[in-house]
Image (cartoon, each protein chain N blue to C red):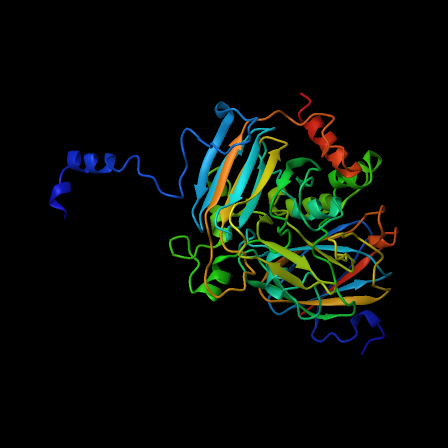
Length: 211
Length: 274
């Protein structure tokens, strides 16, 4: 038994448990059948997320295949994360948050100049985190694709207007993902401070893997 | 063995006799397009090709070139991958395209943005109004499920494998095929996030005109939209015509339409400041 609320509902042995600092990258292998829990420790912290097939990292998460197959833009409990080859990579088996985003992409130094102005060029950004983590395994810029933003809220209005708005997450809320194949998970704990995705205050997240 | 073609000279004559055959889906060299805009000289035509149903094509276009795509039969779907021709690690970023422009639906006046905060294409004219930034392309697994086959060598080729072949013609690989935009086949997003396909079939002849804002490699696949609800595989020819044009000027209305667009053009102009 434990009094650690972040472990509530998890079964199996804890294979990994790590606090990812605010603004930092994270990379870890998750083997088929393992469950990755992401804990939004302080609330409304966007967790930018990519995953690659461990056996062939040219096969990777495809936001477009995923939303097309489920006929809905939002990722919810039951959503299956599909690869660019149409195969199941991970399944969201539980989410304390109603839905997550996969259309908003990752912030970058370059797109920040478009969205906010040139004064933001020097700020840290998710693409730099993704690159730093991926480069440790030989992947580079051409391996960047549309990602998931756990705990981030991007509604689309009737006229097509969309944007990153105030989050619907809260301190301690979690999302659980079961690996359907051996995968490499690459995360950027989003450092963005120019929009509401992190409540203008990037914070740590906790990554727990159970076997 | 066919005795008439039993020697190389006979085979050569047989092959040469096929030259000049006209079919619907083929390139025209040198390009001829009598329906080009009046302001475009015949000598400025760059490309004239009709893609087959399920076909693909690829082209390098210079900054300023304009590309007109026409849905000839009402069931074309132009799935685009776009690269910076001189450094193809820079490519279309669909997420940035919708996020930076605060809009999910492509139309005239909007931009296709790269992952480096620059403009790859501007949409000059849109006679369709039904496009899709969300659903990507079919793949061999989805076509196998839906049509019983999805391979390049079969009757129902899938969009992803077409884009891979097109990218490969430029030395690119599976890693380089990225999230795409679909022109002519659209989606609408409902309040709960549900995706409604808007795939026609439409009236023939709808056209979209794009302007290259960088030297680009574009790959276009013409396969049925992945959410086409019809049980049968429906695809009609897609015509591509391109002509030379000047690089976008500082007073261009699209360049100056929004602060985000202006900065995207500033970034593009900065790239070519050399």
